[in-house]
Every structure is written in structure tokens, then in C-alpha cells.
Amino acid sequence: MDTLLPLAEPGHEAPLRRTDAFSYACKGCGGCCRNKRIAVTPYEVWRLSRACGIDTGEVLARHVEPDAPYLRVDEAGECVFLREGRCSVHRDRPLVCRLYPLGRQREENGDETFWRLEPRPGSPGVYGTDTTVADYLAQQDVDELLNVVDRYQALYYHLFELLRQLAPTDVPPAAHASFAEDQDARPTDGASRAAAPGAAVFHEWFDVDRLVGAFCERTGRPLPTAPRDWLDAHIDAIDAWLDAQGLGRGGLT
Ligand code: SF4
Image (cartoon, rainbow, N blue to C red; front, side, top):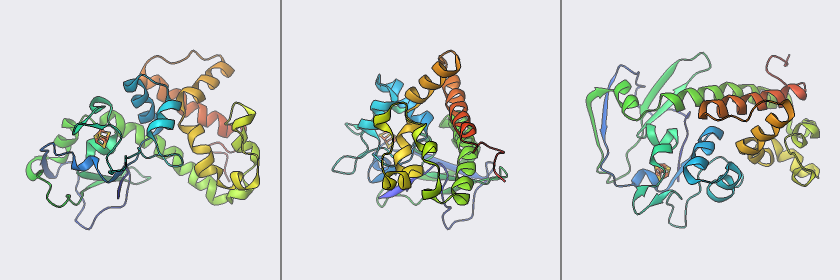
């Protein structure tokens, strides 16, 4: 199963820039929705929750893999949101679905490149050079989600640096426990603490409704209404949590 990430390793072809020629005519076969692991950010989980009329905890429980931020697939390898050959959350589909068949790489210094993903054998989609990469991105309405993934990426760089400096078993238990608002959700043994930076804490960080709700209650900040405010509040909540552990951005030596 291929994994589609908003930031991934480039293919073998020469990288593309936004000004380079690129076009793609989708024929609606749904092939890109099968046998793929679709990566999502917390904000995309939030958008999907609003599209489905459920909260982010339910989206995670029903539609996201239990220990990694990928949409679930059914026994046939089809994305859980594919219904009768069509995307049932089209307006709120994740960034990687919009970018496909392009991949994107963005360096820490902001340098951005794209590359063409290998088409599925037999795909009726037509690659061309009628427009540019920038035109294709505009057609797919990706500006907001590209900005979102770049903001989370900056956070991830910090977290990776943190994990590089702290072996997982050395991460203070409080660093994991404080993300959980109730005792039952807290890791209780060494094994779960060791896995916490990846698997055990993952749902806590991605459960935007729960995390932002607790953050707003604790700080007296009004609960967000606009989508962009939910994103800001979620990133602020994670930053506040890191600061509380003495692990905030700028806090590493
Ligand atoms: S979210 Fe929609 S577009 Fe993306 S893989 Fe699932 S069904 Fe396909």
C-alpha cells in the first residue's frame, strides 16, 4: 500500500517548481482512493469532523488508524470516505488527496519542490503540460492546507529535535500524562510511556476538540468559532503544553 504524505521523499524524476509545466486530467476512477495510506494533520481531522457532524474524538475512533495519522481503509483497501466510487467528503478532503498526483517537499528553509507520483498501472488519468504546477495547485484549492501543513511541520521539527535529545524512555512521564485530561487516559506503565511520543500520545494531540476545549477552559480563552481560529488554538495549546514541560520552542539547548 502506497503512503501519501503532505511531505515525503521525492521520486526519481527531476523536481518541479511552481512555474514548471504540469497538468493532470482526473477521470474519476477512484484509483487514488484505494490501496493508499492517506496522511492527515490534526486540522484535517477537525475539518473531517465538521463534514461528518461528529467530534474529532469520534473521527479518530471511527476513521483514523489507531496508532498513526492515516485514514482507515476497508477490507478491500478502499478509503473509508469513498462511497459508490466518489469521495463523500470532497470539500474537506485532505491535502494529499488534493495534491495527487503530485508530491511536495518543503525544506526547513522554506525551499519547495514537487514531483510527479507514479501513476497506478492502468490509470485513465492524463498527464500533460497544458498549465503549470501553480495552476494545478490553484485548481485544487490547496493554499490553506499548504499553510496548515507548514505550520505543523515547524512544530514537528521541534518535536523531532526534542526526541533526538531525549530518548523516548527518558521523556518525563508528566510530558505524556499532562496531555490527558483524566487519569484513565494516562499511560500507566513503562511500556506505554516508551511508546508515548508516537502512538500513545498521538490521539491526544489529534483530538482537537478535546485538547482545545480543555485549553480554552483552563486559560479562559473563548472557544473558537472560525476554522482558522481552531487551528491557531490547537497550535497554541500544544505550544503551551510544551512550555509547561520546559520543552517549548526556543527552550532546547
Ligand atoms: S478522503 Fe476522499 S479523495 Fe481522499 S482518499 Fe478518501 S475518498 Fe479519496
